[in-house]
Length: 89
Image (cartoon, rainbow, N blue to C red):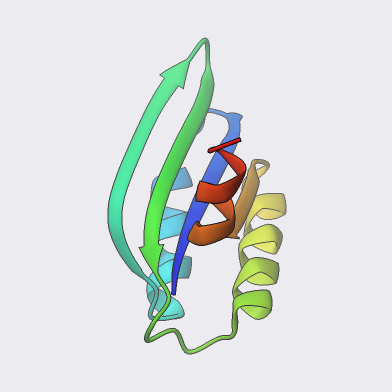
C-alpha cells in the first residue's frame, strides 16, 4: 500500500530529519518528496510505500501524529487511493 504524508508547521531545524527517521524506523520507504518554505511555514508532501512496514497503518499514523506534537507541526498520513479519490472530485 502507498500513502501520502503531509507535514505543515512553523519552520525549524530537524523536521525533515525527524520525519524521515520515524518512517525509516517503521520500514516505510519514501518514494517521492516535495517541500517548501512559505513565509516561515514549512510544508512537505511525501509519497510513501508501506508494503514492508513493521507497523499497521493505524499504528504508523499514531506514531507520526505523536512525532508531529513533539516537533510542533501537523503530520498526517492517508491511503493514496483515498487521497487520489478525494482530489478527483
